[in-house]
Length: 153
Length: 153
Length: 153
Picture 1 (spheres, each protein chain N blue to C red):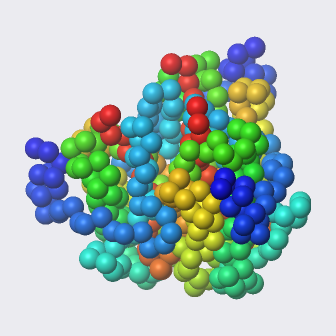
Picture 2: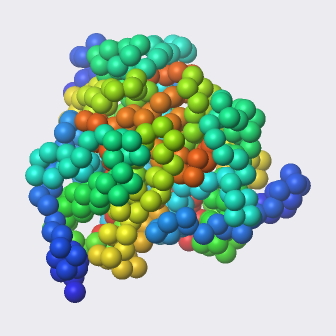
């Protein structure tokens, strides 16, 4: 199965690549590395959720936001290189979790993104990452995910 | 016009590259990539503003801080490679906004940096970025900006 | 002296590389660059400290946490490439400091990591970095440190 088929098997599909919400580009390829701007859990042009994980939102909803954000990041890589099948390796995720005071399960929130990548790409989906809490995110998004991917040259 | 001339046309000039405030280096070149340490909105050795955007400072003052910080980042690249004209592409910005509770316009603050880069470098200034809120920054700076740039080899 | 000997001279030794606390990999090499996931100040499987720097913990304890976390990052690089002697350059640190309200000495906390690298590797240990405050970290860790290192090819 290719990555799209694995997504379909999970009941998911690649969304249209969201346009940037400000004056920058969503993706940039330098050699075989594709850099992706921070993605929010947008679905069809609006945030799937807003607010703080561990307060307004449960851990499970936070993980769902991480999954939605990383799907958008994959959509950006696909837009950059013409499809997910050109991805050789997911290299790095930066996961910022809009965290209510006392919420310390940022790693489990980020797993929403990491587990999806492992399911879709297998070994090639296993990446390094930094997952941290923050007190505020753009548009009151619960999660922001940035990505670096290595693609076929 | 070259980048310095475009800066001048905007009434701006490249500041002296600020020394690091701690035990690290301000820039490091690996191949054709130049990595820049997180820059604060320093002007002539002191912070242009301190405090939290959306509380102590307005959105407009926050954007001005992002502009001041990215000017310092450009000064570091220029110090690294001998001038702005050797920049091929601004690759990535990380923008951390010291955010008052409830402030969610981090993207607009970061535009202070992104718009400047687009104005100075045109297409070569368009970068990926992650803009997030944080609860505290070094020296109570309102904004910290880190950068990766690709330079002529 | 080699890096291990310099560590020993400082009364330190490389810990076993901590396993990831979630579904990702601790290190990933792409060409001559080794990317390290965010490391916490783990010692023998538990956090050396928990809580917020500038509140629960002093600046000095925060710097000690940064040192413990960067030792774990070095252990990951060593695991990736077979020893610290293969490191050509420490390229970048991302240092996230779990910060009590009003704490603005993130740079001094991060120096716990940066000073160690300079002591162990000399010029090759001098890196760029971004040091920021955050309101929460995974497992209530006081510090999280991510790293990029260049290794011999």
